[in-house]
Length: 207
Image (tube, rainbow, N blue to C red; front, side, top):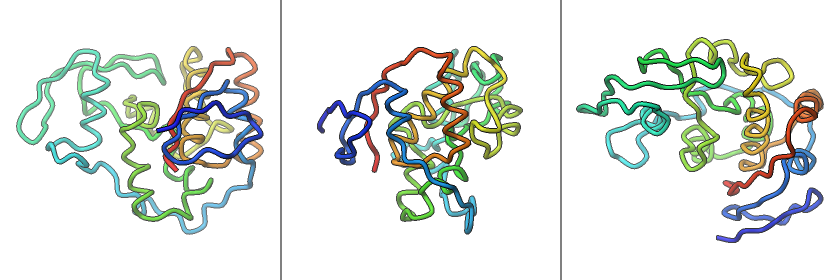
């Protein structure tokens, strides 16, 4: 696997390459394109699979990985106890059922910005991406419902202190999956990053 530093003007990286560049440069490198939700259905993304056949679905894999206090794992990956921190609303939860696993860049948003042209296998990989910890995140079910399928132009985490991380991770996921952004999204990301450090991102390209 290659590791390369790519300037904003270059587009020579291949899937499996790891790129590193400041987040503002990563934002500038994302193609700008109007979005279309024509033909979208959540059913076109098979999610919460058990890719490694260990009995735990993608949802439970994320809950196990992100637990502040590890839950007990029973038969069929049933989880009991444990605690989790939801950065969207700066809140801690002690019951797994109070949490949702959020696609940081929502499934519908990925469809709008390029995934409509993907294969079924690519959409399944996106919906269950455990290879980059920024792609899926355990958050309160309340904040997940509030966000729904919105991008940064219309929704940002209620916890102000998390917004720089959220914008940076959003750009990282879009970079990883070679997705586009629309003009309103670009403006929102730019406005958010104006108040943030120009954090370097390091990401392995999925496609």
